[in-house]
Image (cartoon, rainbow over all chains, first blue to last red; front, top):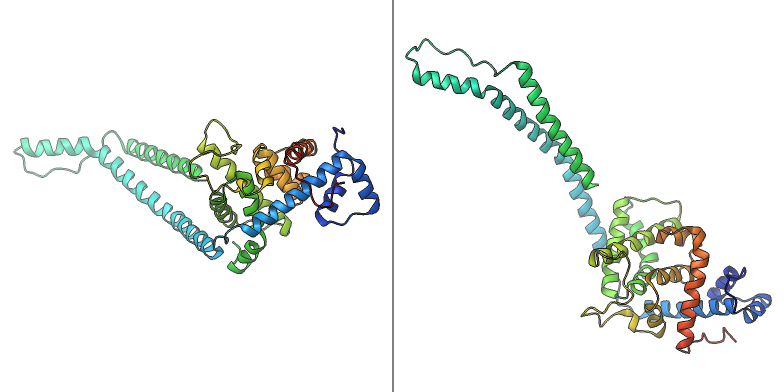
Length: 158
Length: 167
């Protein structure tokens, strides 16, 4: 038995699918076991496909698939639009938290003084803990972490 | 994204053969319908234009094949393959039981089933089959040859012969 693909196999497959055999190809098929097998397989699969297509219940409604696709697209658009709003909100919150943290020691000492001191000449505005550079660095660090988290989640969503 | 009329047109032309491919490959018509819908949803989401009708059809088959593989990978994490035959409860309506050819096909490996269907029912080229199944185009000819031999043996064992085709 021939254990290698026959050079005529593409032509035989096409003829078996269409049912149009030239005399030469028909003669080759009858003498070539590989091509006879191919003809058998093509004919069997064609009848199976026909039976499967004819006996299968109706297809899912394309209108519903279209609607689901539209809804999913809209949802993605909304998500994409609100992502930046949410990012800005988070950034603002982070800045507020960083500034509050930076001023916390000064505010704490001010409150402490208000309770202990009898001098009511009026407190001066609290100074930032450390320096303004520290506040800036703290804020930038928080923002950087937020941006990194957002980028990572964007990559995961893709 | 294409408009609804264009989508309906594409669906009309491709849905039946795609469902038959999925049903014969996974052996379950209900699952085939789920995968079919998901394949079209992914296709629409991708906004794939394609050079022509054949290109779009091939892309759709590739999505469907990947979805099928992913489905069974999730179901059975130890393998990334479609099962040889599903013995799970509620599988009584499995489509491979409906015909002798279907039963013979169900005894083949999933890759053999997909390859044979694409080559001999869909008339896909070796390059197209390789793209859809994630294989090397150069190895398709010999893989197809072996798959064909295996199916022919099973068909002959069932005494199935196409009328008037083989002497």
